[in-house]
Image (tube, rainbow, N blue to C red; front, side, top):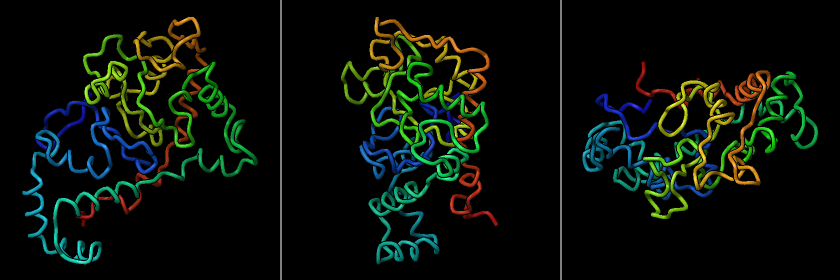
Length: 271
């Protein structure tokens, strides 16, 4: 399932969440990395005919006519002038402020003495079991892409969705054969709240995602290394049902409910 634009049209890809975007140190935003910086990225959906269907000139003119925007721009930039550059900088800084740090995972890490490489304090046996599968490259391979404390990766990855993908991802932007089938790796923070999954929204549940990695990975030429065995074959996880149940139990600990209800990110025009 793809994302829906302002007039009901479907976008080219399922949109990524914006949580912890400030920590993508390599930047290159969108699934295919076509925006070099966050300042570039925030202006593109505005001009997309499906997403928002506007032009930057029309947006600038509209903001200038609303009595509450010029004082906001003066407070931020020193004068009431509204232009493309200031809109870009203001939007990018707002996105950088969307940070998740109060999930059950964060709380358990803070309560656990020493490095959080083993069982976490406050986790159930099932949650710790899922964490072990997630972090152990030889068992789950999840950490091969999502192994940082924020469960993101710097480089684009191919996770074997298709052997010969029609959507070539980063390769469309770079033109390099080595980037075909690779996409930006999203953070798993609040994954419970960001259904559906993958760049084309093909999976509706976490269980479907796990089964893909368990038995459905395609042998793409640019497949991410942890998904391939030393002999070149695709890695089949062969998880038991208990292990399949443990993985989502861990993934759900990455949900930061406070982020979803924080007034700073709510609709400012309600009430």
